[in-house]
Image (cartoon, rainbow, N blue to C red):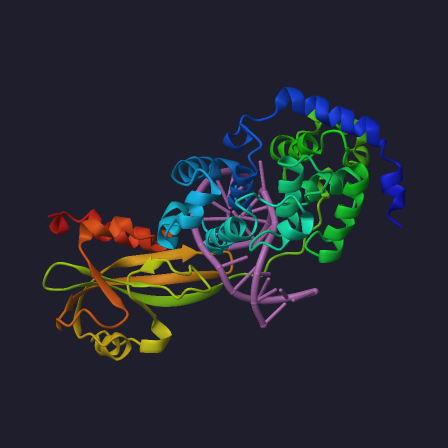
Length: 363
DNA sequence: AAAGCGGGGCC
DNA sequence: GGCCCAGCTTT
């Protein structure tokens, strides 16, 4: 049924037009300096749901710190999370390190070039598998991401919802026909570059497009209507009380988040949903929750933080720790100038500046 | 199939 | 405010 659109594509001409354009216009990116499968892997994980400009500095620092699978395998997870701090989707970092450790222990340190082995690694899904196999190992494997679906939903005028799994499979099937066996690495990267610079989500630059004459959406004037994607539902709001709890030595209480789930194994200032404590500002609830007595003093400010699936509305208070048995319990007490050494999510990095930028705390 | 999982930039 | 971005995992 979709054979109509694929059959009307002149595949050899499309490949040639695209690759010629790529040869002259490819972006100079740090992970393109060689074909090191480890670096390709790291870059692909970082690039999941993340823009190239955001990734570049993270990638450079990360490779400097962990140049090969061995350094990453041996590193402390907190060190890895610190290198990932601010990049988001932190399970990517945890999964990447787990997978790299498996590569070292089970594959002699060589990133697998077998689709089954590669795809079985933590955090390596269909897209990343195809990207590594094609870019690092020159295998003609499709690597279907949002870019590829946008470009080919237009070229082939495919109007199915790209949020559906079936649609993604449809693109993979098409790509297996279209991808050249000659230089699949350049082909897949060319699609990425085309999607990033020409075939953009809004206002695509069709007049400069090297494959304009192959594009069925352009021919019909519907390129702005594609791809079709179901709308996301809006975020849930959660209100929190956050405490800047200082003990008599001038140290602040922080806690490590649970290993799994949102912001797993990152650190934060103690934080409780207001729903659980009501409008009680005495601090008694804190003793019930953390086993430490404190007195809540002034309100420091409010902060909203937007995630893709929820919103935190945070109220931040100063607090004075009254008990001195700081050793047990969930909390750790840290000097203000040591706070920078822990991986914090961006929301709590902002809260951290309440302390580090406050002249009263510099000592 | 749907939900959970970050953060930034653009409109 | 909504949408998008070189997606994967779990339910």
